[in-house]
Length: 267
Ligand code: ACM
Image 1 (cartoon, rainbow, N blue to C red):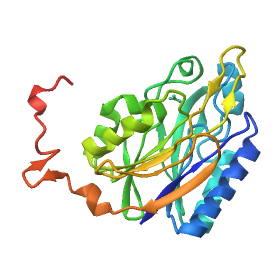
Image 2 (image 1 turned 90 degrees about the vertical axis):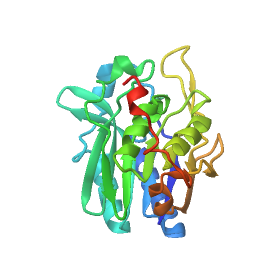
Image 3 (image 1 turned 180 degrees about the vertical axis):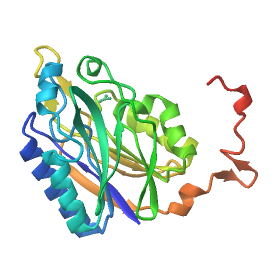
Image 4 (image 1 turned 45 degrees about the horizontal axis):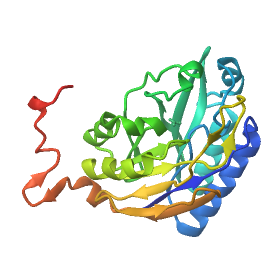
């Protein structure tokens, strides 16, 4: 199968523009490569730097009925593909930093970011959904969001639950994640697709955020299959061999899951 990412440059607060732009890029990527799974960045439809929890609540959308969910759902149906997208999810009076997996038949699953980064703690409710694995065609897909990369338990849990591919919507500002995700892939023998954004936001005076781009696709052996630049929106897709992600042997006598010494680990 083929899977990939779309790296975007959202306009803060302009949900219609951001969603329509992303849908056009998904359509172009799937049309030119035959990709059937595409990841979008974290908070792709709103932008990142909310000034307040109230502003986030005003811009957040329902996971099924919002403009982003509806347009992505239509695109997934029309193209016959699965899409993972990060968005501000409104649920009652709460706002979560969420990711949704949408397929040709509609929403498959939602994940709410467990590890909130920096100022996000003032904006979002902490995630209350477990790390879960969903079927997307033949692939088993797990989701984690941006800063979750720093907590190896996130990717490990998804891998132990059978993920072949971890889709990782991101809005990275620190430099460490692209290299760290090589280890996350290698130590779990899974594919990882990090979809990041480019551009900068300074909606809070003196708190300029520059997003690092470098969206990437990592193979179960840690190979960097694709890595985007730091400045421009773009899209990439690659061939994924699901058998490679399901074979946890790293030598003929080392299966990285069977060799775990769980009795020695602090949980
Ligand atoms: C991040 O979690 N958006 C850095």
